Length: 127
Image (cartoon, rainbow, N blue to C red):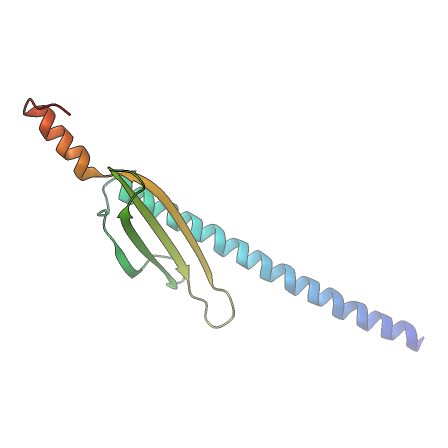
């Protein structure tokens, strides 16, 4: 009887740890998904011209809990006329280990090059 009780208590402890691990994994997946959504949204805002195409240091991001921030870097790309745009979204937990970061990188045509080509074409110049 005593052995059965020890086995029951041990089994409950192991099951409790598994449940805790599952809850933590679900929280991490939820945060990762939110970070991906925020990064994609910010990149789309930049590509649509809603946000300027410029480097941004860490700035607050509107989130459910106010713990989200983002940064954006704009650098020369691998070819002329391309820019390397990178958006990083960060969630700072409240010391409970729920931090998450996601980085989205995309090559974008440089709007200045497109504008120069448009001006040249309208003035009768060749590309």
